Amino acid sequence: MGLQVNPILPKFGAECSGLDITRPLSPEELKEVTDAMDKFGVCVYRDTGLTDEQHVEFSRNFGYLERVPAREGMKMRLPFRELFDASNLNLEGEITQDPAAIQYRKGDRLWHTDSAFMEKRTSYSLLLAHQVPGEGGETWFADTRTAYDDLPEDMKEFLEDKVGVNSLWWSRMKAGAEIAEEEIDARPKARHPLVHTHKGSGRKALFIAAHTMDIEGMDKDEGRSLIKQLIEHCTQPQYIFSVKWNAGDLVIWDNLCTMHRGGEFDYEHEKRDMRRTTVREGTEPHTMETGDDPFAELFSSTPKTVDIVGAREGGR
Ligand code: OGA
Ligand code: MN
Image 1: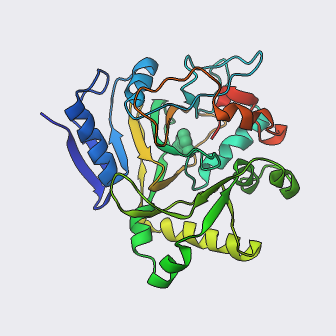
Image 2: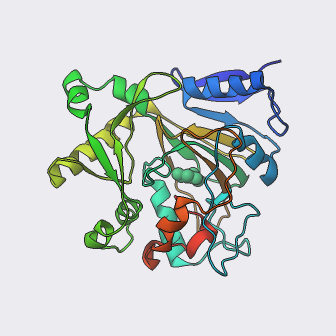
Image 3: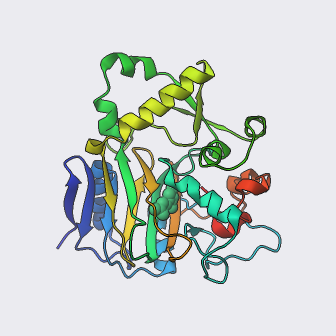
């Protein structure tokens, strides 16, 4: 029996079943997985039984995996540098009380695309639930292809060659971290076209995120109000759905045609252990690199207020 794909919205999101992804997949099976991704942008695999190692191995099918930067003397909670820690836990596996860590995670509750602040974009993110709160803690997804399709023609024309300027610290500031705009200006930024053609489907998509700070060549206020307007457009009810997690569930999303955000939950009292692998756009399956990832450089200058005590909590 091949992969069963049940759409969540007519053109966006699918529940996938019938495939054991803990073991190596045949080229045909892999194609079924990527075809479903190209079509639906977000695929939910329930009760996968994936271990950390199998999670990483499965993810390597889609390209080079970004690595959490290694820092002098920094211990990590998770056993592989390919696993980004999206939990609310500290090294001991207890709920973190570190205000910087709590503050940093708030940024995940803004609509964003992973690593939009990096020059090399992220294609798939694969998030596996290990422990989930009793209530809340769902993840929301937005369809930036269909939202683009529905824009008025004059807006499409206007956006055609516009370039967004993206900064990690901009999104952290918007989430309430104390960081001055001059400080953001002094830190690395990444430029990405606001509209691009999504390779797997040939459909156009908006590429915007909480990290998108300015639009090149536009007045700052006008650019920022347009970014806000576009995010609001993409996140209207007809373009979004949420995933309610159970331990063992894996969700794959394609950052190049979606946005996502975490939902609220009682993060000071309930454990939520989520681990993510992140695939770099345009890289070959099973690419291994031993050198340091560009992430390392970016995070080496992270200011304390938005740092989450370095690598141990991951970064996006
Ligand atoms: C992520 C992320 C949201 C969530 O892992 O990239 O944004 O609900 N997660 O955990
Ligand atoms: Mn994210």
